[in-house]
Length: 341
Picture 1 (cartoon, one colour):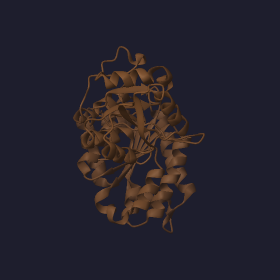
Picture 2 (spheres, rainbow, N blue to C red; picture 1 turned 30 degrees about the vertical axis):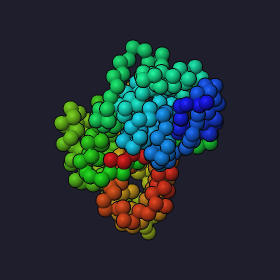
Picture 3 (cartoon, rainbow, N blue to C red; picture 1 turned 180 degrees about the vertical axis):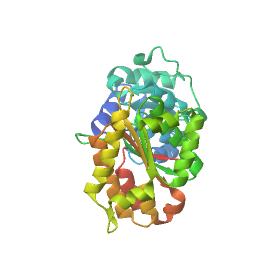
Picture 4 (cartoon, rainbow, N blue to C red; picture 1 turned 90 degrees about the vertical axis):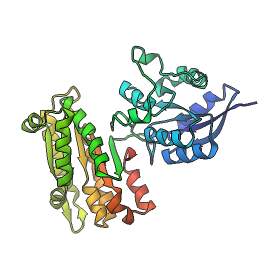
């Protein structure tokens, strides 16, 4: 009889089938739940209290990193094994920092999955041979919160044959949390020699600037080099909004030229541009949800045209009254991952 109850969380249908068929080779493993998004994973974990959860990172609604943190609180006895397409050591470190017990790269799953499951169920940590030489000390949620990444911490969604972009969204309940995360997001790019474009409110731009200085970024040099570009979100909206809706050509021209200019002076190995914007938050705060969603769609075009990592910010305080669940789902659907702070 099966004695280990497993929940599988994976939004890619073919890979989900592969995981389940692999688990069937071990008769003691019983798949008791299969879900395809992060919020459903949290709910299923709380409902079933399974022995083991196989968890993807790039998930709709709520990314796997954040889902793991919530699951650890609601189902503390459940062991978590990440199965992700990400192969960065930094991602593994952050994933294990949630309290998860293991990490398997999807391309290695045929070889490693059952071995990883066995190790995790024995109370051991599993990270796979490709990470030999790395020291992954089991962490805590507090350790995990020290790093905030978008492209590397959250895998892009897979939608059919489309290779989706790095375009994340964060819903935050207080400015301090947003600015701390934004400092790490932008600061890491600048330290790597890459460029950053920040379109934010005046208070957030000022707060970010002071935090970047404390973070150790030579922000003055970055500004002088043109690797750090910052301007007001309301002013940006005024350049492309016509009759309450964004003009596609003006939007793409504005941000395309900014990103291209920033990319020219980036000195990092990948010459990527990090972009943060909260014009969408201003639109939603004005009650113009359709314009906000249209901007998100246009942002996806930008993300598919350029080597960028994009983060959109929504403050829950002022906008949550005007954002019903349908609007929330539509906003989430336009992003490669969803964070909440």
